[in-house]
Length: 524
Image 1 (cartoon, rainbow, N blue to C red):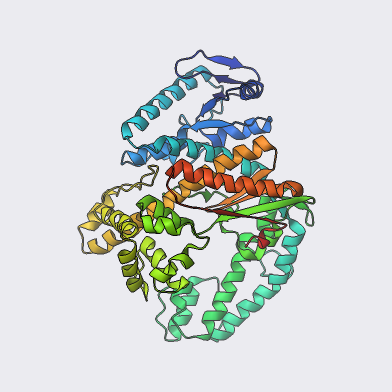
Image 2: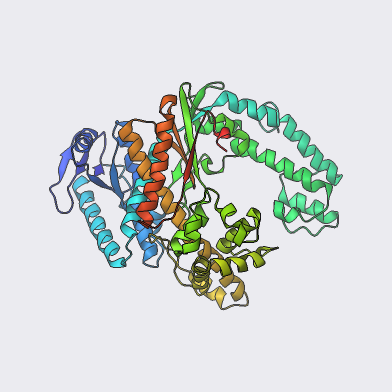
């Protein structure tokens, strides 16, 4: 499919079908979607091509996003994707751009077909059984991201204003801090005993150095080891300042659409599918993936509706069990709380079991971690070896893959040079930590993509509600209150379906726990 100007467009069955011109492309696509066998549309870039179709009332059931697929396939082949496919870029001037002038629809269709055939050949040549599933899920993610950005998250500006006033004080004049935030800034100044700007890292470091403290940076973890009255004051100030600067009144003016100061509207962030190397999503505006608890109450269902929020319980440890095939750990996933279930074998306490698992996946060795990781190695050798092997491969500069085949970036020439320098051990260890976690976090991203693809379809077919928010291992649906129980059941089915899609009959359990709430703040 190629979109033209003023609603026109072109379609062509693949491979090698006849080009068809449509004065009203949306009508043609709607007709095709209403048939018994819905097509899988090949598009250059869902982020650019799908919104105009949605504006015309079109919903695509399936697609192949050439840009997203190219990004995955390039890494599978051990190279970085071309710059024009790394992100959706309206100024890229490539196959993946909708041309601003007259559109050569037939010519672009030929180029799309060539790209699709090339990607199909490379997918088969890769010899990775799950790669086709990954490409389908990634493309489904492109549809979900566009639909969620269009739908938006229900947002109450009045509640948001109240939360900010309670936390920060009334909205200030331009260039001024809110009253309560200014009071916190004054406490930082008082703790140091002289004037400074608490937003200036340079000034804060200089103040600590003047007090005789060898502070290297102003990160919370660095400051926690120092005894000075400014430490706690600065921590509190920065927590509040972040809410004001990143999620305050100006943020709402920009990102909440269709609302006055005291009316319900929609928060419409821009999602970036596979924004991280692991396949985790990012946000290209709006900060949807970093919403602080301080403002979550403002995400509220509309009257007569509910938000059904669900998060996966201990997703990454459960997936480690699955990808490693560790029978004992897989058996433990039957429990609702994996950490409690594993505690008798990993230190005797839930907290210690959690440290053991997290440290194994992230390469932690501080405190009790080293001893607990040794327990992990002894009790769950297959799971331990799975992440250890990934770390060793990464340290050598090798490639590691997720369950379905997403591949970690190959080391750059600069990395290889650094490996042979005095910092070689440090460089190797750092990449080993990355690849150790990549295989788990990346598989978690794949599982979540399949969940959303399955849930999206069931919500649509049942007319139950709209998928409005996604955060790594959380999904949120906005639905009529009397459909909330159905939506919760659909979410649970999507989780079960995603687990079967990835792991077949393997008896691993990865539950999603739905909860119907009025506001996001009630979800956890």
